[in-house]
Image: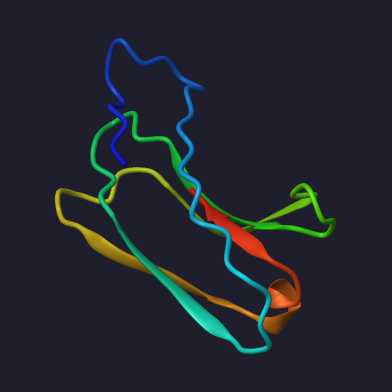
Length: 95
C-alpha cells in the first residue's frame, strides 16, 4: 500500500488495508511486514488486530504496533507477536 503524504493530501488523511480473515487457533504467531516512512509530513503508521467475537461482524479492534515520524529512505522490518489472547476467535490484521 502507498499513500502520498505531500499535497494534495492534508493532515488527518487515512488509508486502510485489511488482511484476509484468519481462523481461530491456539498458537502464538509473528506478524511481519516492511515499511518505508520518509518525509517531513509522514504521520503515523498503526497496525491493529480486529477480532470477530460474533458470527457476523468484527466487534473489537486492538492496536498492536505503532510508529510515527521520518525514518529515512530505507525499508525497515516491523513485527509483533500475535498471542493466543487474540487468536481464540477469527481475526484480521489492519494497517
